[in-house]
Every structure is written in structure tokens, then in C-alpha cells.
Image (tube, rainbow, N blue to C red; front, side, top):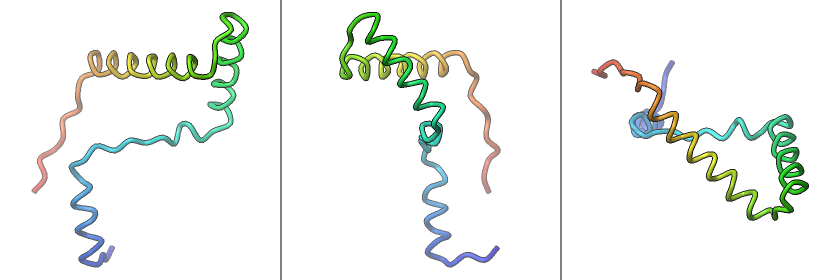
Length: 80
């Protein structure tokens, strides 16, 4: 595959940075789960949207911390 020098530099500059992918949010199933969770939380505790967002953020952070603590990091091959 042939690449122009400008696009080759872009690819090389992005290679070392971590990427965040939010594609999992782009499904109706995930949005339905969020709506169901919010509805149950609202009926159970009378929570507001702000409280729900903060709770989901807290669970997200806890999930990332637990995953980072329990999953071994993958080793990369050295680039030449």
C-alpha cells in the first residue's frame, strides 16, 4: 500500500499514543441498558439524571481500576 509522506507521518505519530474507543456506546442495546438502569434507579431511589451519571462514572472508574489491577499487560514486540 502506498502512502503519501504526510499520511505516513500521521500514522507514525499516532502509533505510540493510547486510543479511546467509544464505539460500544453506539448501539441501541447499550442505550436500552442505560435507559433500563436509569428507570430502575429512579423507581427504587428517586434518583436524578445527575446522580445517575455520577454513579455510572463511578462504576466506570472502578471497572477500569479493577481491570488494570487484575489483567496482565500485553507485551509488545519491539519496533524496528
